[in-house]
Length: 345
Image 1 (cartoon, one colour):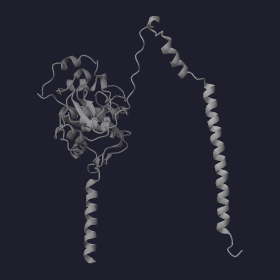
Image 2: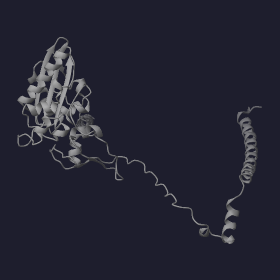
Image 3: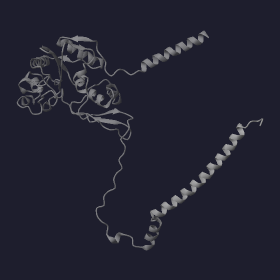
Image 4: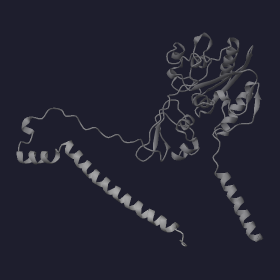
């Protein structure tokens, strides 16, 4: 008996261990809680978030520190949380003018992003701040193609203002040839107002499953594994496994990725019959009476005839059922009397 209890206890502990290992991991991994009061602490918090997702940390760049701090100061001075730069220049133009070797298509803004927020007191970083938990702001902190980061904090009369600037530098570390022309125009690069997107990327248009249940996504400009995984409701690791990417987080514009398997294909739409291109001539209509007349005689009984026939059959069937029900009721009543009769009577 004692041995049986030990076996049962061992089985119970093993089952609990198996369940604990099979539980899904949380969507957001939360770095250690801290009060953010300096730019370096804000950078450390973002890099800790990246590490919790298995991403490499971003290197601090003096230009990005300058742009982020300048934006935090500008927001504190105006009391306005905005991506707009003083003087009306764009974020892209500001980076180039300060000497940052920005990569990406500069006419579309290049690979750069900025998250901003304000709070009444020092920022309590307990996981990701609620204002930054949407896909765009998370992509600023978790995009794989960014290489550098900067942060700024400024205190105004009504609270604290925060800015995190991220960008990707060219592989050579040198300015692109088109950088000079970007400084002389605002076309395609201006980021203005509170409604400005924090980073430029082509919005993700979700693909539907094919006949095999596979969902294929074609990567567009500025899209990352993170943003694709969020929109399709999957994970970076799953996409990596489905496409044999290993630990590689870099994807290219135009690359086709298998993002889901076993999805439900959309219902097929029947193909409409082609419209007639013309009216057939009279000579094309069969004129032999032996073919036409028997056909019309069979398929053209009147609706009244069919209805009367159906009604007659229905009436006969109803009468038969009534007789059967009355007979069954009589039999049932007799049986009930027989079962409950007093045997001494």
